[in-house]
Image (tube, rainbow, N blue to C red; front, side, top):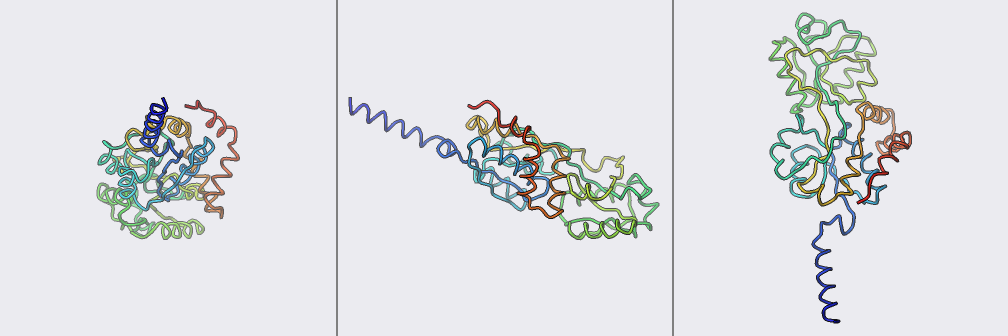
Length: 283
């Protein structure tokens, strides 16, 4: 009998070690890109998982290619991402090894915008007003998807304005300077962004549909993550952060708070909602 008991114990121990790592230590390996639209999503979801008893290890990445490679390899288990357009190429390349867990926000949009005091409303009106804008559209980092779309817009609409490459910081500084003086300026911009909250801006209409429609954010994971981690999946799927809230969190950061402080303040202000998220079925 003692021999049989030892055998059963050995089999049980082997079975436990064969289970996924989270089952042994309740650790979720979460990836994120340190961008203003993704860090609030990451911070809020991390808090909900931790309140459900998980330990969350967050790894930051600098660009989509590295993040998706890490997810496909298993260096991280979950990642918040757009899959329809911004990161579509990476999703499409790896999707056989990945799964969509749940949507977490919606409304990402990017395009060419001007302050609301500027008296044009469409990209088609830019050429007739090129001198008003100094013959320039102020852009961000070369290689960004937004810049690729803006270059396509310049070509599609036959614009006689120069698309100026630079950086997000340089574009922001140029926008603030022009806005403070109530001068015309055209910039490449996106939402959610604290800039759309701090400055009264309007996107120029894009009748040719060069810029993609509003996109959704999803939590994605390695294929099989949801089946292997049902409790974590339910906690993740409970979270939904409206785009306006992401913008407000980043507005607080631009006002001097750290991202951790801004996320904590948002959670405190939405305590009832977060409590309902946490009161989901335990598996």
